[in-house]
Image 1 (cartoon, rainbow, N blue to C red):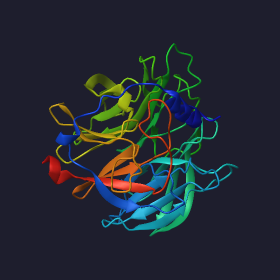
Image 2 (image 1 turned 120 degrees about the horizontal axis):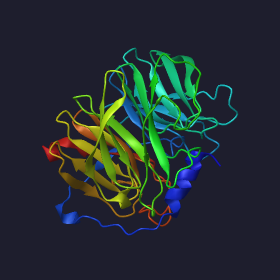
Image 3 (image 1 turned 180 degrees about the horizontal axis):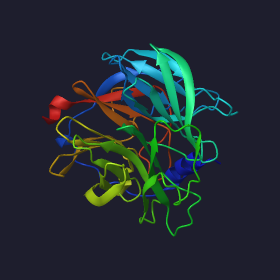
Image 4 (image 1 turned 135 degrees about the vertical axis):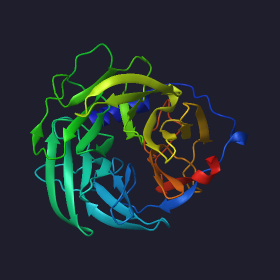
Length: 345
C-alpha cells in the first residue's frame, strides 16, 4: 500500500464528532463546473499563463483512469489538457498539487507513494505537452507551491521517520534540479520544516501550503488543526516558526490560499466546511454543509481552493467515507463549487 493510500485509509477510519456552525448565519457556495467521467476526484488548481484555470485529477476513485489535467475558463467550461505521463513507471500518475513557474512550465506533485512519488516539470507549446522532466524522486508530495525559483512541497506522513507520533514535513527543491534522489528522512537537506502531530485521534500531518503577499509561508496540520506561519531567509530556510491560528481538528483542513488582502481560506475536507482567517488572525466559518452530492454547488469533501477573478473556486474530492467524514459515498456528479468573494468584502 502506498503512503498516499495509507493516509487516505487513516482518514476514513478516524472517529470524531463535528461541531458545525449555525447554517442560518452562513453564505452558500455555488456551482462552477460539472466535470467529465475521467475526473471523479478533482484536487488542486493553478492559473495558467493564458489566464485559464488548470485542475489536477489524481483519479483515486477509478484505477483504470490515468492521472489527468484539465483546463477551465471563467465560465466553468471544461476541456482536457493532458494525461500526466507515466514515464518509466508501470502505474498511472497521481497528480495532486500543481504550480506554474514564470517560464510557463507546470510543476506537478505526483503522489504515488515514497518509492514512486516524484516532482515533475511539464513544458508546453500552447496547450501541447512537449517535454516531461523529473525534478525529484523519493518523496510523496501533496501540496505544491512555486516561489522564487524553488518548489515547496508538503508530505502528509513520512513513514521512514521513526517518531512517537506521525511526522510530516515541507521540502524545498530548486526547480533546476533533475532526478534528485531524496532519502525521505530528516537527514534530507531539502527538508526545511517537519512536525509531529500531537492529536492521538488523527495521526496525519501537513497538507496545504501557501505564500502571502509578504513572502511568509503558511501550512496547516490536518491532525492538530494548527496553521503555522514560517519566516524564510534568502536561501529559503525557515528562521522562525509561529502558530498563526487554530481551526477545529475535526475539519481536517486541506488546501489553503490567500486573496489580495492576505485573507486566508481553508478547505475543511472532512467537515464540508470553508474557513476564512483574516489578516488579524480571526477565524470564521463561511460555509458548512451536511452530506450531499454537490449538485447545487454545495461543498462535497472540499480539497483545494484558489482565487480566480471574483470567485473562490473549490474542488469537491468526494471520495473518503467512514467515521469522521461528513461524506458517506462517492457519486456523480463530479463538481467544482465557488464562493463569491464579494460576500466577504
